[in-house]
Length: 94
Image (tube, rainbow, N blue to C red; front, side):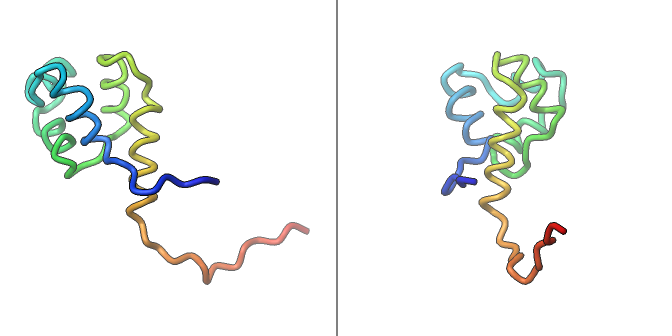
């Protein structure tokens, strides 16, 4: 499996690829998505991640897919995790 080095937080993509070009505030987007404004503000500030609910709403609104948002979040989360699993012995097939 190939990993992405230093993937962007989905909030960075939301802010710079969608909100700024559309001259739309996080509050305006939140209203259009029928979610609390703080959810989109925190996402755009990169202090919270994309949930399945938010991914579905963003995908519908922007004409993307939920996977677009969720894959970005997964890649970001994996890159930020520094859990050492080297001591775990893999299961051997019989």
